[in-house]
Length: 209
Image (cartoon, rainbow, N blue to C red; front, side):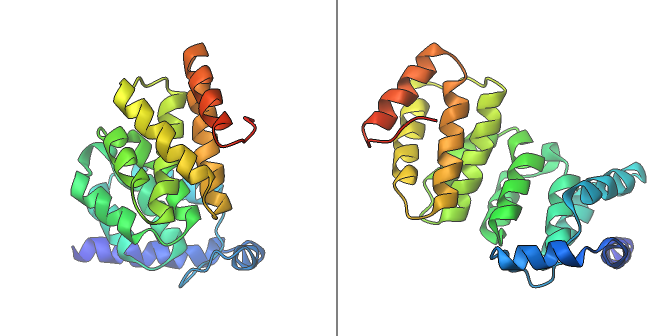
């Protein structure tokens, strides 16, 4: 465990070298308020993740340790390093509860949650959350699953459509955008899916993009 903490310390020090003050300032202006934010770009974080993984550290433990840090770059890097096949469902729930911003929710969905063996189950669970961030994350996960043409039964489809219509009528534009994107990806799975999506959108008097 001491080795893990030393590696976390070294990783955090490396953020200073890769910091981008303009990016960090831009994030603050957009409301992405982190306890600590070095403004390291996503491509650089992806490069760092590949470099770290090539050293064959215990990625599961390292990802857990990084996630505990209240630092933007640590959170995102953790989602890039966590092996999806090793992440227990209860750990995924804990991480979701601790997601601090929409950016981290999106990165967690793209880098990690969409690859979990129980991704669809968690996505639908998060859609039913009273909080916006889990819902946004859930829609992003489903968008990726729809993109991969993952099939769902009628009950799941009905639940997705019903939840999406509620999200589209929320006061949060980011939640609206995530739900619409998921509906678009859903519609692209075939003609039947497109008809379902268009019919649903018409019930709330919105145009389908």
